[in-house]
Length: 245
Image (cartoon, rainbow, N blue to C red; front, side, top):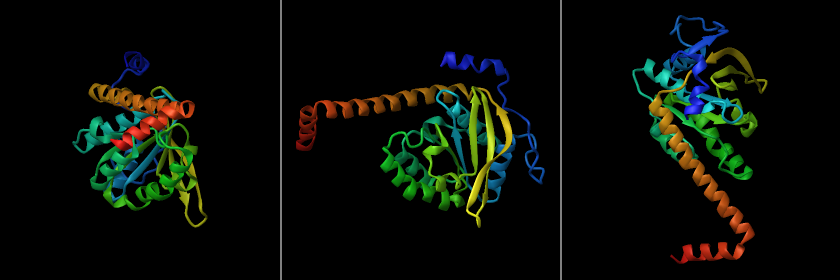
């Protein structure tokens, strides 16, 4: 974590900074905030939710940007963003959170990583479409991190509202999803670039701890899978013992 934090140090300020901003909103609504945040808060004011996909290669601060954004947005509403209760590595606890959440911020990490291609297709087709299409009245803001936009079906991509690319550590490119519904066409349109610093120390520590636990579980699953392939008799005994118990 210290080494990762050092890579942020060159940005200096602990405040989020924006540049190359295009003033496309026709109203004076939180004018000092990043354009992305202005859009999100205004959508909430109109009774709408916001779904943001954050893409980029590993260790390019996708999650840190998402956490930092949730912190900044929460401050505007006099709330505190808590990684332990609002960041999710698995779909099931995220869905349970979404069942009762209103006016909340949440981050779904490493979208689709824990599923095979067929299962992930089913989840997107049935569950994600429900979240992205029919839950807008709850006014929640959801950040989803993934390595590449191809992890989402095309139909799911354009139910999102913003697409964000990590350019390097501490710098992201913000794109707004533009849809022409009658034509069935959509695209990502650039609106601004954001430089940002580390999230709050407590949230960084808690996130890194949570990610290690989740990563260890994924490795254990992979080990079990390989052992089952290479030693089917051992796997059969383990499964048989578990069923007997």
